[in-house]
Amino acid sequence: MIRTSHPNKKLTEIIQHLGKEKTISVELNPYKTIDYNILTRINPSFCSVTWIANRNDPKNPRLLPPIMVAKDLIRKGYVVLVHIPGIFYTRDRMRNILLVLKEIGVRNIFAMRGGGPWLKIDHCDFPFAQDFIEFISSEFGNYFEIVIAGFPHIHPATGSMENEMFFLRQKVEAGASLIFTQACMSPQRYLNYRRICTEYAIDIPIIFGLLMFRSYNDFVRVKRMCCFIDKSVYRAALQAKRSRQSKQHGRKWTNYLIRELLKSDLTVGVHIFTQNFFELANNILIESEANKCKADLKKRRKPSSVPFSNYTSTSSS
Image 1 (cartoon, helix red, strand yellow):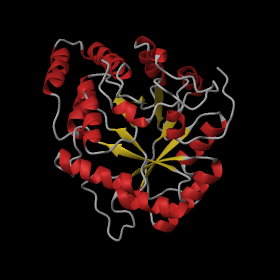
Image 2 (cartoon, one colour; image 1 turned 135 degrees about the vertical axis):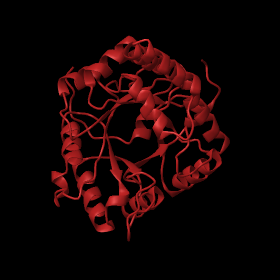
Image 3 (cartoon, helix red, strand yellow; image 1 turned 90 degrees about the horizontal axis):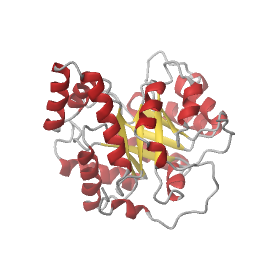
C-alpha cells in the first residue's frame, strides 16, 4: 500500500472521526532497524516513536534519532506521536526540541517523567510529568496534543489507585487530553481501569497499550512493572512454560487480548509495543482479525457525533 504524505493531525481529532471504529497503532524504536515494507503492510492508524535519553546525545535536536525517524514517518504519510522523558532535559533544551518537532510537523507529544521512580536528578527542571505538561502548555498553547501514561496495575510510586487517579486528574487539568496505558495481562484489568477513570470524572480517551507476549519472559516483564498482577493469568503462563508451550501460549494470549479489547465499547483503540518485531505484529493482527475493527483513515468522513463519553459506557463484550 502506497501512503501519501499529508499534514499530521492531533490524535483526538482522529478519534473524533472514528465513531465506533478503533485505532490500531504501533510503537517504533528509533534506535533499531525499522522495516518500512512491513510497517506499510500493517498500515497503522498512527506510529509512536520511543525516546532514550543519553548524555552523548547530539546538541542539534535535528540529529536525535527519535526526531529523525519522526520526520521520516511524516514524510511517508504517517501520523506520529513522539515520546519525550522530561526529567533528562533543561527548559532551554526542551524548548529547542519542541520547536524542531513543531517545525517538522509533529502534533502529538507523549509527555512522561522518564527514568523510573527511583531516579533522582539534582536541579531538574521537570522532576515530574506534570511539570513537563505545564511547560508544553505554557510555551506552545494547544498546538501539541499531550498524551500521558496510565497505569491499570498502579504506578510503583503512587501505591494506591486513589493516588493514581489524583495525579492523573492533575495531569489532565494541566493540559493532557489522551491516555496511553501500561501493558496488562488481562482485558478485564484494562476495562476496569477505564471504568475507574470514569468514576473519577476522567473522561478523556484511553488507548490500551499491549505487549506482544512472545514467551513466559514477557509475562515476567509485566509482573515486574506492576504493584499487583492477575495471578490466574500469570499461573497459566508459568504452566505453559513448564509444558514447553510458552511461545504458543503467549501468541494465543496476545490474540485473545486484542480481540476482547476491540469488541468492547470501552475501547478507543489498541497500541502494540512492537519492539520493532513488525512481522510478528502484522501476523498477530491478521490472526486476531483486528482490521475488521480498524478505521480506514484514508477515507474522508464527516466528524462523528459520538462523544468521548460514549467510550465510558458499559462494555458490549
